[in-house]
Image 1 (cartoon, one colour):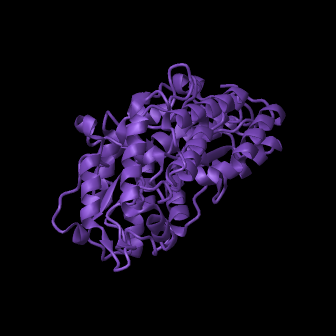
Image 2: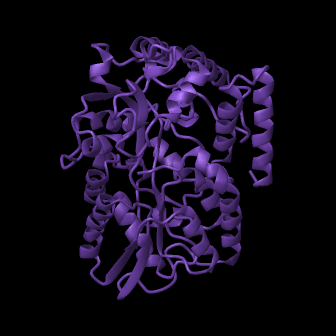
Image 3: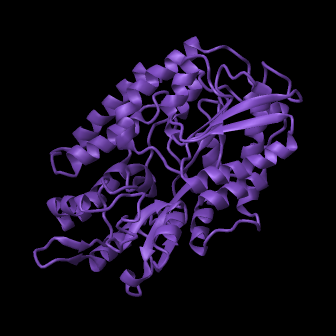
Length: 443
């Protein structure tokens, strides 16, 4: 699946917040699972999702076929390549589809708190669905303050990819100190000192090397028990920032920027890991599918992402998030919509079909163990990270990923270029900005 990156989220966050607020006010009011035809009536439901590639669209249809066989009276019309903005506009306009799926897990707090997506908690209780079929981190990113307005539909787990040829016999690092040391050993420079091959690029401007995916391995906390930001209070943040800046400075900030400007596109065959310009990189499980299609001759391995030295016992854990699916407010076929959501997110065969087609992690424990999974050997790392009890996610807030956007901007625009003179003061200022934004959003 494709996640919304913090840099992209900054451009659309305000519009999304306003759209969801308006949606809560203008859309038709309906109780979850109620309204419209009964489940057994002849009817047509509209389902929107964000996948667009041919193999993704085909895989989704294959998974839906199981629902069609189970409910022959329900015609399912599927529309792909739909964004959160399109979904929000449809809800606001009073004509939403019956089922929606979003890649932007960070927006769940907005979906739930605004009422734009219906609370499914009563239906889960009514139908006796045991939420323990989902790992703890997954249960966390599908609810906000006790309101579960979404169900998980596949997941992303992050780990370390390494090029076996470029590793020169070295084993994948388990700690951040080992990662930095090995990155230096594996880096190859041109005669003028510029980077020819990077052992590991620590900048947040390198694709998936965002704080969400890397700082997590230092055991950072995002928000305190009071819901306020703790960037200045949690020492793990300073440890992460110092580690990444030290390695970036070893490369040379200008050198690193020049190297990153020369890189190919993340989701194209020119990706630098696939072109053997990077020896190690943190990425999601979907990269295995891209390598299979775009660089089939690449000799690579995967391992859990390294952890900070003081958390060596947590090696094997990582960061997860994933696609979420729900029933928007104003859905005209709520009973059938809930039946569809329940089927696609809890049926083992449906999830296995999707996982095999899309190259994502199936989001229930039974699906994880299915003998029908047909995924490359390197994929096993991500299944293990996903089920690890120490694996975490980032918290939902009423203004979506705004705190992630502000952190990303701070690291990219101030910390990495060396503009921060007093880190403690800068982090206190970041906390204040995040807290004020949360206050305005009702957090």
